[in-house]
Length: 189
Image 1: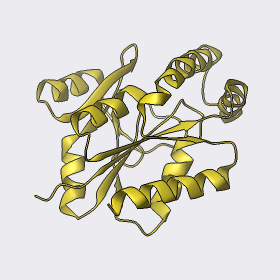
Image 2: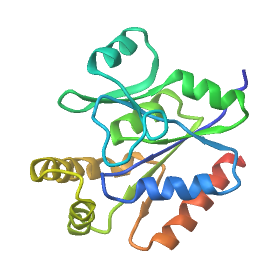
Image 3: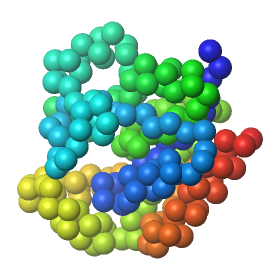
């Protein structure tokens, strides 16, 4: 099986990473999205197998024991996220590079395991106040969950320097052009 490349996009929640990943996927590039597995409950209109693979904690831990993840992390207490090896292998077999929309630690774990195959991109919010406004406008989290996300964002921003590229998402159209150029340059090398 010919191995492809990894594009890992990470950011604090509310930075616009998912929007930028969708912009990349809408381009005519040989990319395929790795659907993360998680133990958290679906939000809004999220669909199992499309947005995430929603698993119970027991199922997730069984996959850990089977070494079925390329990476996984306990992002919040008892809230696991991970990338299944089967997704990566399926995408590579179809001749595509794999794009991940994952947390900072997961992104750095993939970069560490596959340094020459991985492009790591950090999406930075313009500032923490804008990030908080974006999260509040979603209306999907309780106040406690929202404060937990903001605290986590402050921690995640400290890892910025460990990423290959950083994009400050203060102008969505400009950010889309930047991420598309960075990814095209990487997959063309």
